Length: 143
Image 1: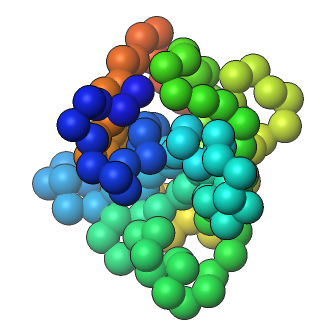
Image 2: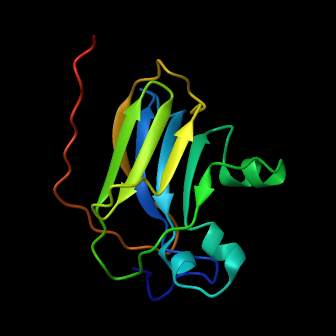
């Protein structure tokens, strides 16, 4: 949910960070923008969820260079529990919301590469209050 003193540009950014480097200098992330899902503005609706790779590949970078495939529309709103599932294999990730069988966003060629490893964390941005529960991480055995 948005905080009472959230700035006008706050969109309820909430998600996960993964492949976080030991010194926190690099990570990848997937997050949603619930207010974008609730608007009638087609441009904002198209930016409902986002993958980015810190430090070099932020949403501003993708937009500035017209790079598609890292954002998608999605359906969910503020003040609700949202289930998020991320399936990450090599350099591809599929992100699912609320038990959907179809990913809301699939990213091939994640920017940190197929062999990236690291910690997992939560992502919450300016003006957002978020609650998390029931985190489950399952790692497949290497073949």
